[in-house]
Image (cartoon, rainbow, N blue to C red; front, side, top):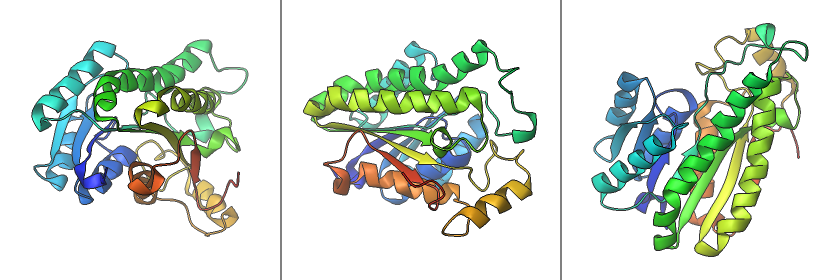
Length: 253
């Protein structure tokens, strides 16, 4: 299915990377659901930038009933089931290396919050999308990961571990749903220049990353957003269970 024929739902799409992913799909002609939890004004701004092919829908992705209601609303609005899900939302986390939790201070509750934000939320969206995708014999699930679980230059214990778990989730789901024409993949960026989540990061860190990256630049949200298009496009139809690292070559796997 061409991207222009897809109905794409992006979680946490009111700002940052999620907003850029929504705009990238909108640019390619897809119909786009901009999910948000609290930032209604920013979500509407993203919708306005795309046009009448976009819809903002509020839902807490940790609440299964709210997620199902969001998918039902999207199908009613566009007259077709959601074909493509981007699990992007970041729950209660900031990339602040100076004030991060250490091995001595991190709590299980913080691990649990990030595991729920990554894996539980993705489970909710996949299960809400599953019936419609099976009926269409087509589905694209794209989970947003991080290069930090492969190279934890900053050991954000709870966040990095949750994204490692999300890769295991991605591969198990890919194995289970592939027979229905559904692919499940991950796109993993590094520290992005610059989002609300990375706003606390000192400029010196960005400079260090740039110096150590083959492309000699820090990846932008727009560049990572464009990479997600590949896993939704016909060119990736034989690819599933994979993790594409998009960080300018900083981490080579």
